[in-house]
Image 1 (cartoon, rainbow, N blue to C red):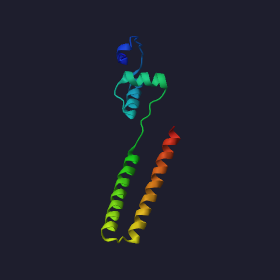
Image 2 (cartoon, rainbow, N blue to C red):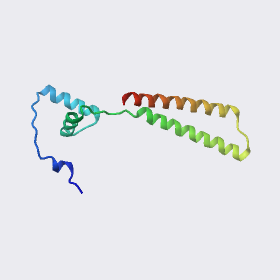
Image 3 (tube, rainbow, N blue to C red):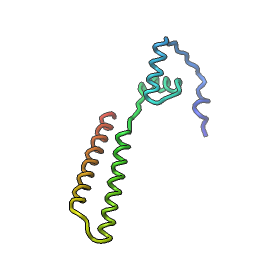
Image 4 (cartoon, rainbow, N blue to C red):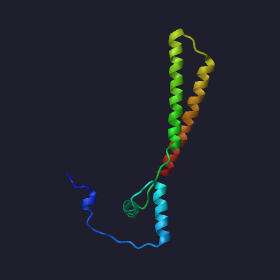
Length: 115
């Protein structure tokens, strides 16, 4: 089993910055959610960028899918219990799923554009 990478890092590199540069680095670290300056600078030096993805729309999509799924289960239970469901309920559910599908497609395209 190999050693953790921190113990393999035996070479020290020094970097001089002015106050404005330190503040800009801190701001950029905060934007991507990093707290370790050494890790941030190493990542930027090796890869040139750090990306923080915003999944808030995806979380909202999942919440709405859960609601629609629950509604669908209720419709299925009603149909199995007394054999009757309303056409309006089916149309409403279809409209909601279509909206969710379009939202999911937009999110996937946005992610693809980032890649």
